[in-house]
Image (cartoon, rainbow, N blue to C red; front, side, top):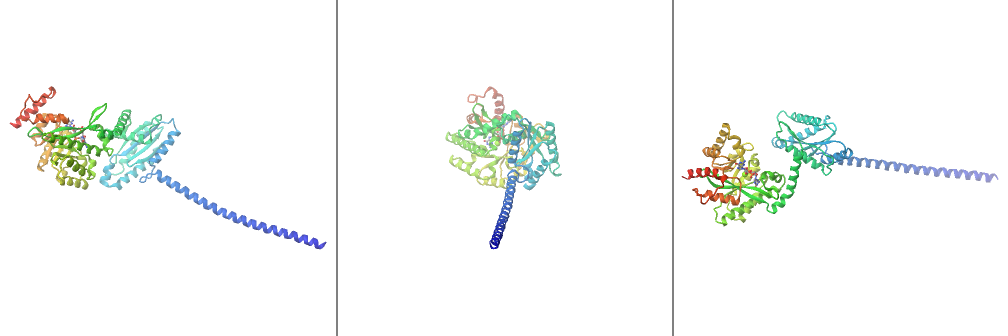
Length: 514
Ligand code: C2E
Ligand code: MG
């Protein structure tokens, strides 16, 4: 009995020991598992943390402007769209502004100074006085500020404040900005943020006198122009391919003989429903796209065709001056193109003159100087066009192998009424003569101007007094009539309107011949 009792007790002790051991093992197991889980958990946590910070960093990089470290265009699109969505009844006003003299700052003080100006501008935007706004550095030289439910006077005050702070940037040079204001019509849902920014840019361009007022509003009229321009931009390439651009020639008159000695090729667009468009209506659009090169190539080829036709029809060919857009002066590809055209139309170089616009050569950079040298080596005749329109770079005349200058027409008009102006003209022409340059004056609109220019030694004149730009057919007719040394009424019939002017010209011509 006792034995059985001892056995039961031992069995119970055994069971208890077994259970305890099992529990310890379990506990150990659980402990092990929990330690392991803790470790995993903390590793996950740190991974999630680093993932979060990577995403944050990526977001920051993706939404931050690299130079100024404020929001960029993507940030702006994101932020503005969510504001528009959240506050459909609010009045939003977008102000886009650019540093007007950024190009000059970069050019004179170098790009690092340009970057500093940008960073300084971003700093102004970060200042607290711009309440109820979101802002961004949209692209290279464009900042945007979106105002929500802000009164006009407060927006103008903010513009004023930014202008003042920019002016304080440096004691040695001024930093100026132009502001375009666009009051957003939220019912026009089709406008993307970039469309809105473009409207502010358009308004900036409409600023007339930035010293007086450096902001302008986007108006419906600007909107119409913008839409027309947009449509034109879309049609330009097709119009080029379908030969809707026409060469007009404006005669250049030798002031010694009063004969046409050459013509300047000026482009016109025969635009369906609108008639013949002046280059002022579309050239800026071409210049804003790479199509300007294509247009120039087209015009140069058309000029070659005109000269070839003259030669084939036994008409004594006259040299044609062709305009070269500044963009070509960034490389030498256009020289090969010109060579190729002249070769395929069998035209000698003395039948063309290249007009290089002063704004393209005025900075006198080494690259431009090399291109001009190369043109000269190839045997092209060169003329600086619109001389005096930017800031008469007199040193250009001695540094470049140029044989002609064409005085800008505004120059003549601007100065022709004041004594001081006439003295400058006289001096310019005298100096050009010293350098053996041929001087052409553009924009001659009266007999007095023509006589004055002849007296002070100008060689060639171009202007409405002699003839407006003409179709090639009319140019040929006029050339034919003016080639005659004597006026023969039976062969030349001026219109009634032209009569008085023609008599003047012919009288002058006869005096010179006789
Ligand atoms: P530009 O080369 O200075 O051409 C002279 C401009 O002055 C022409 O304007 C001509 O019509 C105008 N003009 C000439 N005489 C008078 C005058 O007595 N009074 C007035 N008020 N104006 C006069 P247009 O034809 O409208 O051309 C404007 C500008 O467009 C040209 O200025 C030239 O820079 C550019 N352009 C014209 N055709 C071409 C082209 O085929 N290629 C390029 N790249 N530019 C062109
Ligand atoms: Mg010209």
